[in-house]
Image (tube, rainbow, N blue to C red):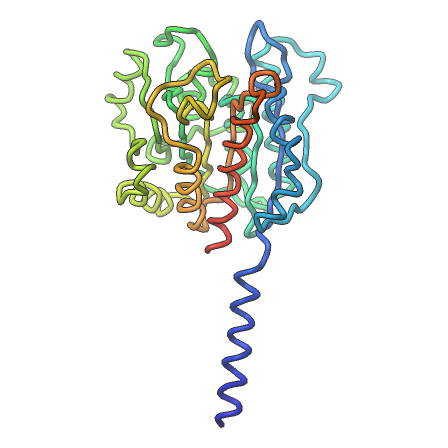
Length: 320
């Protein structure tokens, strides 16, 4: 019996070791369409992160790509359409399709995104599982700004200041529906993180809707409130998407970003928070938006910060 007992222990130990070392399945999709006006339609931000040798790095971090990194483009019919916002929405519909094509069990989907408008495509893509079953998707939106303006409240007029409001069904419904997100996200399924710069009327909207949020200090401390917000969101939804605008970070780590705000977390702080969040098996996707690229980041500081966040997510999934 002793021999059998020790043999069983050896088998269990080996099985646990294999489980700990199992590669995390990863799907990476680049969406360069941001809907900005008076600027190039295709952002180089996603390519810049990819060019760091992302395939190799994902392997070093314990991930395994399920297919080559995908790159979103408009098809021939869509190319004939006009309007930056409309074309961005069409590209997001394509983004959603590619997200759904790659979905598998125990998969992390990573979006390298031009800007925060691309969260609409990721949300739409995650709405159905690999078998076509509808899911309730939660959004954790990490940004120095709320991106919760509507056309009546915005100071800048930027579409990039509205995507969470659009996702929630508060404005620009055609954009949301074109992306494939036919039903808006309930406010109960959205959590903000790191917000510290709101337009005055946008701040009123935060108060009106009693938004759920965690602070920069919560990120730095991996606080009980941070864990509580993630755990409670996971209880309400089927899957969670973590979206990060790089301007949430300390300005020293995104020197080429034109919308930085003081007193942000370091990328190491936020990477540790990613590890915490991705330990929850319902956290299935990460979006990295608005990474300053190439000529705006000559020392590679912003790109390294983005890579730190992706690594943190993979490490979290490994620890499940």
